[in-house]
Image 1 (cartoon, rainbow over the protein chains, first blue to last red):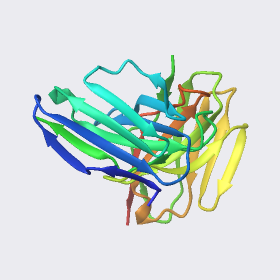
Image 2: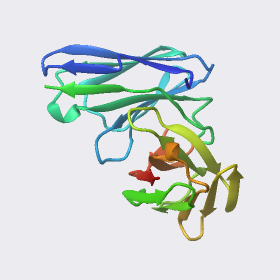
Image 3: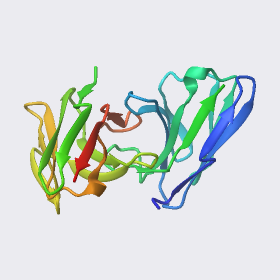
Length: 114
Length: 110
């Protein structure tokens, strides 16, 4: 248990569906992140939120839409995804976004797009 | 650019020592992290190097040389439970944060 909880653990969706991934951290951290982990590729940073404001968006397609309603919760809204979006989506948090604090990861959502 | 390389796979024997290398072509970073990730689980923090040199934590040690652009993770007295992927990552301040290497999958054999 890392203090970061993600739901659901597994998700299968069609290309026309809309779904959301949820992340909650119980560590009192100020920064939260979405990462994508595809087979045989490095972890890719998608979004960074610091104190509930988006800091970084690494040119992620608009079919991925993040939401950070407060410092403990982070969502990733998904719509009209493509099969190549199938991957493990990891949420993480850290004390701040200075880059010298370790990341605490959730267990991830394994997403399959059919 | 931020090019980070690691060997894809390594195999070692229980009780042995293994060194996992990480080379990078980047500068201006805060430090270098190592994470362990068991299959189907979240990555977990192992070590963090800011200054050049060796950081020791029980069976695990990590080394950083900024001038030579590389780091390594040293695992001693290998156990079966050490079979996992090992990820190195360089960290930057404010927003850009962590850039991960491809990971090294270590198999520990009896």
